[in-house]
Length: 301
Image (cartoon, rainbow, N blue to C red; front, side, top):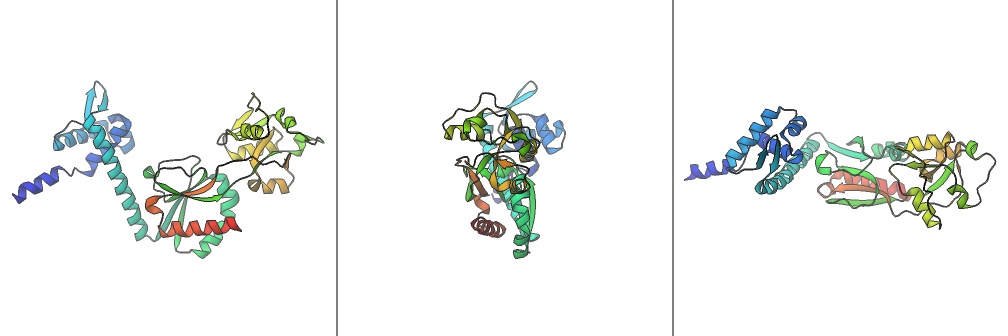
């Protein structure tokens, strides 16, 4: 009787290779794409999924010519297995971190990091020599469960599911341009800027429309030039290609060197801000706590 019980338990605990093959196939709706994800052959993925269905005694996919589609049972199973694999990944990351010391994998915004965070960061390392920091750049929200990351510095709103957001600071963006672009012209009215060529940052598509709207004007229908990165917008403005809406605290150097000048000191009113975003399961992880406390000290100064 005990032997039969053990055999039943084994039947309900498929191998990790089967589950990973199934999870990748369900995520991609394709054995071929799953094979690419896992660096296996399409035949290997197909065999693993077939073996899983045989072991469970249920059909997880409909095979339709060269495509696949989850059955109703498969949809439910896929959701549960995806969550289970996420838990395994997180547990493994915690174990590795404990073995190798206090590791903190942090996602950062490139410009915020190079212009604000990095100049200050040696002080954090001096204060916390036991913590090893690994940085990666992320410009937009992502799924923490798909990344080996403990936390992220994000601009926007702290509305990521399953995370805790800590507000760090707002940013005050103002219209700036190169002296060479302005010549001897002094801007006295906002509608003068409305008629100038505008430079747009791709990750802040509503910056100019929002600024004009808050000042009682409509945004020009000709949106102007759109650039992907903060550094590109800054350099375009310095080169005299137009007027940019840039955060004051990130262009201090350019302002001090006279490469840019503020046309009107009327900041963009923005409900978004910089936040430290942390998955709930890492909210009390010692390196995250240390970073959070240190960041809050920096923004208060």
